[in-house]
Length: 434
Image (cartoon, rainbow, N blue to C red; front, top):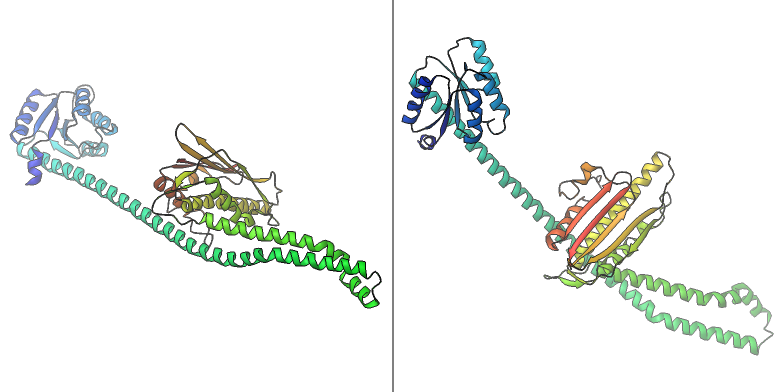
């Protein structure tokens, strides 16, 4: 009953060169509560169908000008009338003609002279089918859209959970490592000055002995020769300088760890982006060095004068880590490819990091560019998708760029874009509000 009620507002286009047929059909249709549109040839039928969008077309086969078959063919090649059901009316009884019409796209045939009850019954059937088909398609589209949205929300939530868990785990790990490093570093730093003082005092004492006792006995001469006293006195200060450098290196690593994995508060804090990039490079320093078969990766920083920005520092540093680590992976892959093909390196491996500020738009930009493998377009268009990765098993989750996209776009209201040319390199551009 619901369908019959809905059918009352439907339009039917009647196409026949016989005015009497049009009159009879129009009256029968209007008695059923349907609305009739009329055309006497194929050309006008196509025009009416394009602007009126009838729910069904009752089409005569034998007409002047273009016949019903050609009219139907044109209707079915037009996107606006493609899905409108067409029923042929014909006096022909040849099965070949019926098959031809059905192959063109008609849904049914009515043979003249027609019975009014048969026409109404067939119209009602196909109107119901058309209505149900449209309703089903709409529901499928709606359900597909709902499922697609649910999938996106699920992936978004999963990324948030993964990213939060990574930051939480990293924060705890770094806090522990930092604590373990700081204790011995503090001990070394505190005692190093005393060592220098004690060494200097002992050397002064030895020099004084040499002055007061210019002719030591044979045992002392042998020990002086054995320990090479002159070299020892010259090298000890150098060792102390090396210790200073080592303590400084440990201090830098500890500071970089704390800077890199700063715990993100519930609200954003002011942070200097350059500190985050530098801490990331410090932590990746061991991977940038010469790896034997693979030459050293040179990092060029071209920093602009950036103001501190309001952000989540730990999450932002994670983005820098993901992009720079991916660039190093690309160089490793490039080098392996060259080794397999027995090729020599054609140019130095370089990662260029450029920062700038746009005062008028109140934004900062960070560009991280490498001259490694580059990516084909089909990979480039999908790199920020959570379900897409090119990494082999055992080489990470492949979620780094998807998480980076979420951090920049969702958490910082910024933009992250990628430009890559196969065989030349890749460039990531990050823009964020100050």
